[in-house]
Amino acid sequence: MLLPVDVALVSSTTSSALGQRKEWATQEEVDKITYSLTVVYYSLYFLDALLCLVGIPFAYFWHEEYDEVAVETGDQTACKRFWTATKYTLAFIAVVIALVLVGFFAPILESQPGHDLGYWRRFLIENRGEHAFTFLLGFVTTIGSCLYVFYTPSGLALLPALLLRRPHSFANQTLVGSTAMQLDFNRERQRQLEGRCGGNSALLSPKDRRELDTLVREERTLIRRQRLIEGRQEEGQSWLVTVYSKLKAILRPFRLLGAFCLFLVGLSTWISLLMTVIDKLTNSPCKHHCGYVLRRTNFNPISWLLIQSSGVFPTDYIIFALLIFLFFWGSVVGVVAVGIRFLWIRIFQIRKGRTSPQAMLLATAMLTLITLGLNYSVVMMLAPQYATFGPQTFCDLAPRSSEEQPDCSNHRHLVKPCSEKGDSTAADKSCTPSVASTILNRVALNFPLFGALLFWAHFLFLGIYLVILVASVVRSPRLDERQLDEDAEEAEEESLLASTRRSGNPT
Image 1 (cartoon, rainbow, N blue to C red):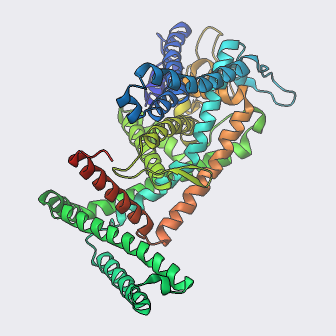
Image 2: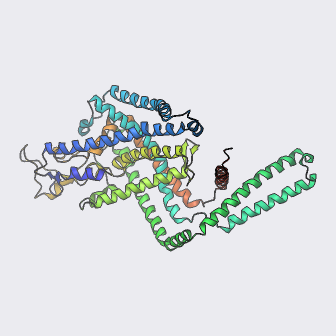
Image 3: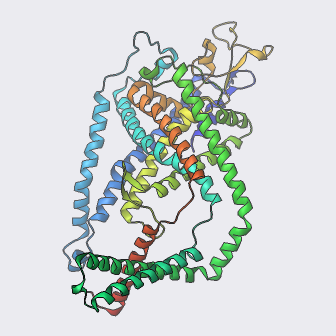
């Protein structure tokens, strides 16, 4: 959310109509602005890294160490719990220190033969401390991008379908009838088997005995499901739920319109990303050797829209904020829909009213890392021209003297938009890149491996979005009966625990 302010501040130093710096915008004043923004960015990045690599792990282990029985007996104190959680967190602190040391001692990149960096040479870092911080930022951003390209496109593709589809209702007569029918069939089959043995299951054959045991377990599951459905039906009969349901029915046309708008915005961002990755793949002068940076950015619809709207502040800020909110919303939907996984193994699931504290902490860490991946994607891929220079322009005309700025008052056709590497020296003198793009370009240029990984990850983003979008359109939604049965079992356990506590019997 700081990016539009960053772009507005650096763009305020130039006159877009004349393509030259304003009188007050001396190099010293510009350096003051960029330095202040750099401090803010580095502070926010540091807090993000500290939260993900130290804060959340400590909170996770603090919760894991809690033992209700030990607390009641006095065997576990807050100090013991704090020390145990700190010991486990030290492993993460060691990882942070190791990453900083690797970045500190990593060889400083120099311009390679055949790959003239030109304008980009200024982004090479010689300060070891800044080099170490840039490595840590690149590492955390790469981890965040791995989560970003998996969860965010899934959520973005599912958003229109979620608005279009009607949620499963527990008052649905089909669900109620199918559960009752399965229960009747189950009990009838049990009566048949018990009739064969006269009530003595020991007389049944091993096959029939196994079938009877299976039917008994299935009956308990169906009864729990039936109770859960009845409980949800009673909740749905309250006046508040009734009013909410009627309001949703009235607003359904607006939901359809919202779904269509979300689809158009999602498709536009997909096209913009596709255009940028193709542009970088074909036109980058040094490819993976410099993280696929570009001399000049071609047309991009999202970037064009933001640049055109930046003339009336805060129009671009509003559009940018809505875009970021959409991507973050898609990330949350993706985490909820897919769950917390390691490869194909589901570790935790996010469910309404039934999410464990550990899952909430991990989801928070994941969303924080996804935000770093989103930051890179927006600045470098989604709207690179806007995020780098905004509406800045330069006068592509030779100045009268080295101390004067070129004057395009009578040559407006020579006023051109700034690019990453202008063809004239006037571009370097009048164009100031945003601090956000400068920091991320340093990551890509000083550590080309991170730049290449971050670039190629967006092909995965494009593919996942397309697959999930097609699947959400073609595949009809189904009620997860297995999840329903798990919810019913948990509800029964909670009910038993509550009744036990009320009776005062700890067993």
